[in-house]
Image 1: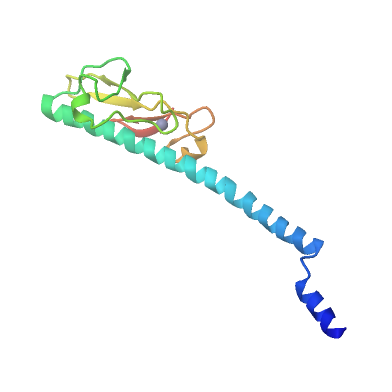
Image 2: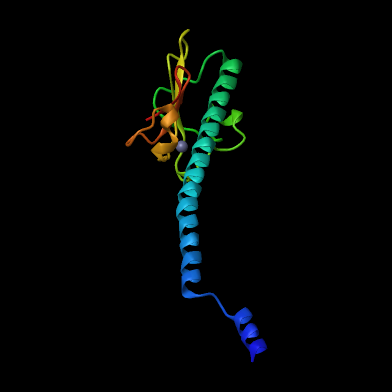
Length: 154
Ligand SMILES: [Zn+2]
């Protein structure tokens, strides 16, 4: 009879309280990890977009090196690898991870003067929390890169 009792004890399942504690711990872990994962994803998208903007800026500098001037583009123009000016300097059309169907755009001012500048604008809407280092706030969700001021949120 005593032996039977010991076997029963070792084979018993979890009590309701034990199960509730395990479920509560899992819920707490999910509550902590899911927002972190979401933030990491948004942060990675912002980093990828900034890398694209740098790549387009490099294409503009390569163009400038070959032509001794930036392209004469005074209205925002789509950046694609088929575009007349920058196409030859881009391996592929840059894609913003938060706006895969949009196009980066660029324009220049004073292209043939000594103080020519350019600005590049991303098409996507980024999480403002990932843009705080460049002035992102609610309503400022696009990333721009200008030769004068570097990265900014717009
Ligand atoms: Zn972007």
